Figure 1 (cartoon, rainbow, N blue to C red):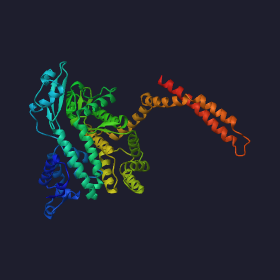
Figure 2 (spheres, helix red, strand yellow):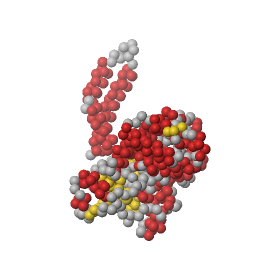
Figure 3 (cartoon, helix red, strand yellow):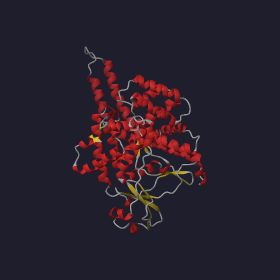
Figure 4 (cartoon, rainbow, N blue to C red):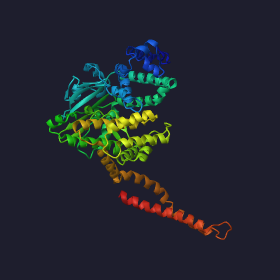
Length: 508
């Protein structure tokens, strides 16, 4: 292959890695794909021998061989059903971040540097045989002196410099693609690389996953049915995560759950409530709630694992999600068009096309039970055809909702996620009326009003002086205007005082 990417001006420390990328891309025959994105001049022979139906598979295999940074890139692209066809999305969803296990002695120096002692000394029991392994980390079991079962998630040695080099090279490739290919510009590659870099750097720092666990545990502190592993911070660092070991049943089949004494219908309802409350009320959610990251526990409880990828939903997005659900339930194309307009702002798509798209979707899915997977299967091709794109945070949210929908359908085929979404919107409305929601708002308001309230007597005296000094017989004087202005000043002062009293009473 006559690779244009060989001409990239990269630092000497990255040239060896660039050479590896070129070799792997060549071995998997990705010249045609790279040419489409302006990164390659494909030869006539490559064009004749290319098999389009195998290109997604070969790309997935190449990404897996290139390592965890490229696997993460492919996983992010798998959420972009608004840009990629179903064949590509399905193939990229099969990406897995596996790797052979390492002898613990290879990991021992890094572990002992964090613990300050050998793990056999720090823990009552430590198992040097790995429980699981992935491309970024390896997991070992241990037991604390009080009998608590824990797992150690240990980052693979020397992986950070390699992933940082990959990010630099991918950023250079994205810039080249964006300037060379109109098709690549549709993907907004530089924005995609920023999202990738954020995801990679967060997952490399295990304290980020620990903080995610603590936040989610706080979100569900009042619900004993939801279990988040406890993080043992005295042993946790950027390269080592120590947390409770949780044993349970993955929600894959109803029969397996029943055999364990669990009720699939109850688990399905709880799973939906947990994910929807994360999205619509708490504003942070598990980015990949597949059966490997969920465990069902005795008492029909659910545990959430692998919290490295957490999505965030702003208050404005939550409003849009509620409007989206309501528009489908009430078969309101105008409201759905408003939501689509907000989601695709800046894409340059005319409003009449957005309206037409909303009307087609409402005709197919509005007013009845909503099958989320079927709806999204229609939505994403429509977005591609109309040139509309969705913000990345919403795509991750939809992916999480579709993932949990698939999980729940597997254990309870009649489960209706759309009805659960309606109930979640009601819970969100109730949450907004709770004192916990309004307390910080009122505290901020009280602080601002206290600055006004202290000046209220002076303001009232100033208004009175102004009224006394206004020459009502002046040629251009307007007594009514002066009186109205004065009344507004007085009303404002009175209102400020009244609100301060009310806030003080509410805050008790």
